[in-house]
Length: 330
Image (cartoon, rainbow, N blue to C red; front, top):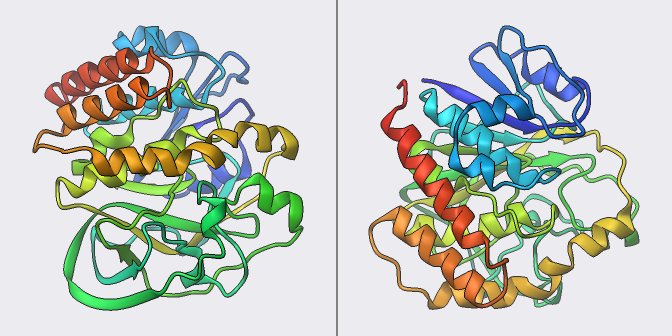
């Protein structure tokens, strides 16, 4: 099995990257940007500079903006072209625990809610805490949650949690100055129709879900992976795939952030998440993942949730994706 870790970075090798490099059966791909410090590639670390990225001849490279998190898309394509069976998404300030890893891509413990949105952090903690991208007006709705045993359900993406400084929004960080350590509980999977935001900081994707890795480029840095997560949940259901959540397998030694800038960058999420999910719920999907992905971004662009050029960039991604899949070294 070929397994790849994709990280964007503008810094020298972090402790987190060095810790991931100790897992010999994983290949790490570092995606550089204009601000990046040059990093020497080594045994299982490949650094792709901006020049290296253009040399790959992907259509998407010509459209992707600089200094944007969506340049990770180039890393996904690079890994897929090299036969990746599993892709792990993380950031350079996450540090893996010794037990880091994910379950097999199935789960027989289903977590359900009486409302559309599920705050999965409530399952893993008694603290008042919610994931980045969770609608603020849902925090105190008092939804009923149930945990049931089912036949094994197929998981397209596992979201692992992060301790110490987990992936919460700027509102949480501005109000609560505390560390969070999640409970060590068994993994769960969400019922189709229940949404919970998932991020790009500690997620592992199986091959069937690869088309939904696409990160939009016309949103802010703080919203691109959240929008991707909501879209992926909707599209995975058409393939009978689910999103699952596990205990914390990393802790975050967070890079320096301006919390008010984060707040401004997250405004899209605060204001648009529920209307976007309502739009997703209204869409009829077919069996083809590429047509579904194209249709979602066309609808998002028509409604003004992403820029008008996003549709063209998504199509460039789809063309590149099909090409690298057909020419994969698997």
